[in-house]
Image 1 (cartoon, rainbow, N blue to C red):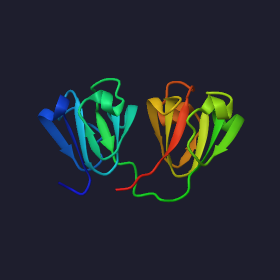
Image 2 (cartoon, rainbow, N blue to C red; image 1 turned 180 degrees about the vertical axis):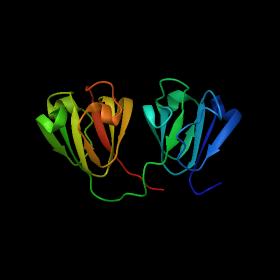
Image 3 (cartoon, rainbow, N blue to C red; image 1 turned 60 degrees about the horizontal axis):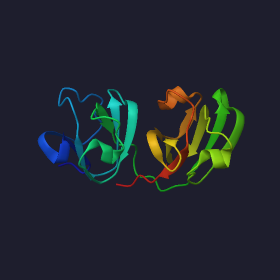
Image 4 (spheres, rainbow, N blue to C red; image 1 turned 180 degrees about the horizontal axis):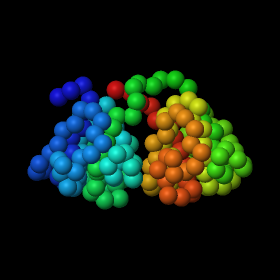
Length: 177
């Protein structure tokens, strides 16, 4: 097993499995369904669709015996990747109500369990991740669909993989291997 590895298996770690130790943009050739995952080391983002698209799931070292344990909406995982190298720096991002960095905005450097309470809206159409790695959640208290955000500018919500602009919470991700 390489330094970083993640295994995809049937429910409760039964049946065929596929082991990967690096980014994999297409997994359909290895299995048709993924019902359990064991992350033996590292931190991973698993995606519902090939080429790192669709629903996203942040997975840390541990066992996920069924897809509900990683907050999955179904048993479909088609790609995965390791987010980035270790990051122990500062966290800073600016969220905007409208596309192209317009409208009401708020700069954050800590977790926010309820965006509506702090930002007075749940609409986020663009954002600028200036430092650190973040997860944007569909619902308050870090529930619902997840969107992994690397440092960079996102002019529209589709650039981070979302079909809509309504979000409930966001948090910092400490990536350490």
